[in-house]
Length: 145
Image (cartoon, rainbow, N blue to C red; front, side, top):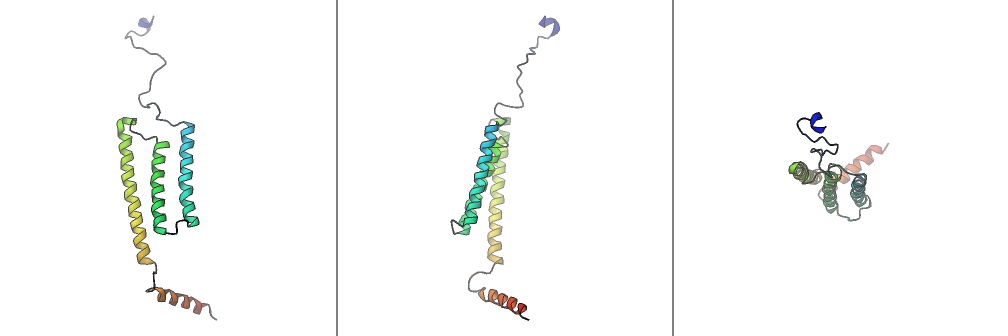
């Protein structure tokens, strides 16, 4: 009967395999919760470092925050975007590597810009103390009747 209905002899069983989605390419509820938990932790720790001024060194705090940001990008790519070396013949892994390179460029460029803006725009040391003192004197004068 099978040959009469299907003359070409194709097996049309219901247990077919979808070639577009490899096993493990979609996350389970548990893996999403792990990703969410890691994201919350990787956000809360830098927030705590800044708000409590634990380290006392703004430059060190900035470097540590950037490291947490980079780790969080990787967590998002693994747990939410499901990127690994097995899916799509490694193309998603190549996309992940490109993302990491771009993140490093953006983070280091941002740190460089913020460092130079801080050095060139903010008054520092004794050299600018007179300028800061003059500004406060001008504010006090404007408040006088």
